[in-house]
Image (cartoon, rainbow, N blue to C red):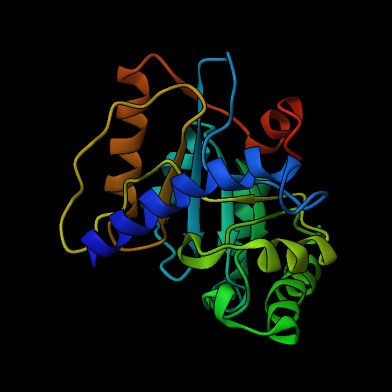
Length: 223
């Protein structure tokens, strides 16, 4: 599992080259694919996916340390304990964004399927949290121009993949040396608290601080 996630992470990083840079050539006018944010600020971006495991220790860390975090949530994962996430929003510095309804590989779906997954999640998350998501994390980092077109139709400003996955799957991944603008991927798993602390420690070691993602995307002209 961990090795497959690493491969997907590499592919997601490569998508930046053909997404953001390629948007001026292929897929003109489509939202960019972002695996790293170009910035001179000494910041990194903490993102957490899915939402199935509601770890109170991780929530205490995020709220207590006022960590800016972007949550790419599945609507079904929030429905049985919405309060866990509203506390992160209201007491912490969390923003909820789109991760589809059922976590499919969007590149395998027809246009109607893409619409149901992306627009469907948008409407459900808006109904729950009172704000329509503007960012999409495509499951598995799988994206092409058809996915970008569907995302645009659902109000998506940018598709966000990741630079490094800190999630412990079968084993704890090696800790990379983070650089300014890197996007850290975590998941709501039983190891979230430990994975989050490793990511925060890696940021400190590199002289970086977590920052809110959307303002930096806007500053870079990517959203």
